[in-house]
Length: 332
Image 1 (cartoon, rainbow, N blue to C red):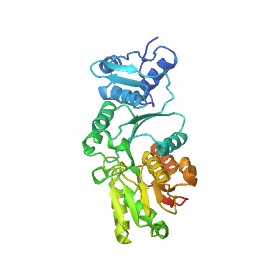
Image 2: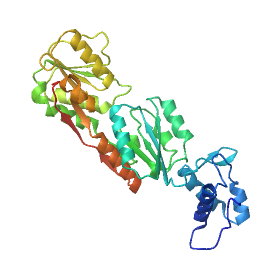
Image 3: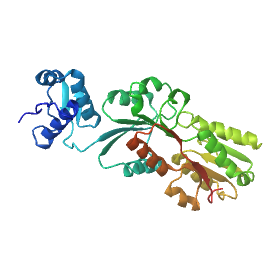
């Protein structure tokens, strides 16, 4: 059976006829995963088409993940599932419990014919650049979590601007792209302000902050809050060799250091809330029960995932600030 049927003069665009014909060949078993397609020029010449028409059809199939290209060799069948209508490239910085909530919510709110491939750059700019560069043209949408990485603009600009969505953090050099983001400076300031009546009972507020991984907005919001309210504060980058003191309240931004500070508090036999306090960022089910509840400042990650899915499905080009709040529990 011929892979590509004759192209007719009809109301159906010629590029769409090419797509339908290749899909039919896959469904009928003429083409299988790994098979090579006829070249662009071969199809162009045989059916008296323009090269752009054939390329448009191939790009549609490629963006949906049905075929892929190999430089210097041609196009190959990637999957036999022709029902995939969209293929999403999702690049996270890292996976943790709250980002898993975001990811699951995103998947749950997409339609069944959308395929999502997830990748992680782990705050490594070389990995970030390679993952994006290797996947140019392979997806219909690109969702990117740039975190606080520097010099990412030139890499992201290699992608079609109408297919890029930013997640969680944005900066001035990326302001042209649609995004769902957290306003870390405002959220930190407002969240701490909501707990001011509790925080004034402590002698010092200690922020554990890693400049390599954490948003600078958190640092700015924290310093603004402390200075505005004339509170004694300290910023540290590690808990190593630090012994908690009575009257301190620790703000920790990741779960690993949350466990570390709890262990240190137990070691010196302090009573949480009475002797010392903790505020964590990014709420999880675990924080509802650990030490009878850990106070958090957190955005709604499930809402973020849901809204992201809606943007992808409707091709919305918006900037949406995801809400955040202080969740007061036993640790403060």
